[in-house]
Image 1 (cartoon, rainbow, N blue to C red):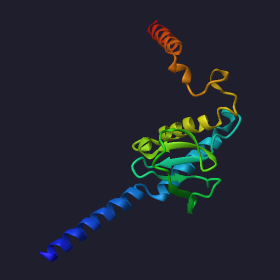
Image 2 (tube, one colour):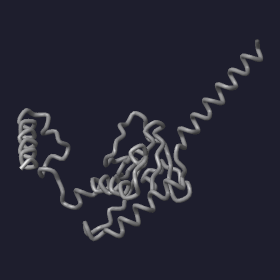
Image 3 (cartoon, rainbow, N blue to C red):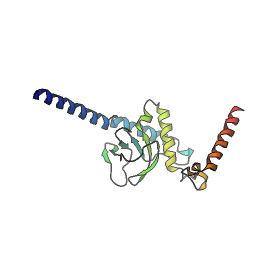
Image 4 (spheres, one colour):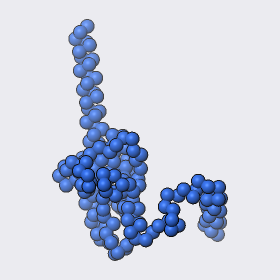
Length: 176
């Protein structure tokens, strides 16, 4: 009976350990590094579009484990270098999304690794460019409505009515 109990505990520990390791490293550092290199190359090639290179601080995050991979170190020293990338753990009490964020003293483009799965190289680069654009859009002079870049105007009835009117106008324009 004791042998069966020990065997059950050992198997459970082995399964738990393999799941933790699997959750921590769902993707190899080489693949992450190549994702960053691909975008750096394309970003430099198209720097004339915005009169600057969009390549900047990127967090790739595993939405299940909150494990992060970045292309540069953070300003507060929270990340650990591993080859030419940096890794760490993002706080689990924080919301994750494909967005621009400020974390660890640095402004980042955050991209969930699950969003990159199955994407072709051009589509992956397009998603990264989109998110990195949000990091620099203020510097480029794109400030929504001149005062409100958080969309809180949609919390008001007038804001929602105006949005619905714009959508109806767009629908009619597309149908014409």
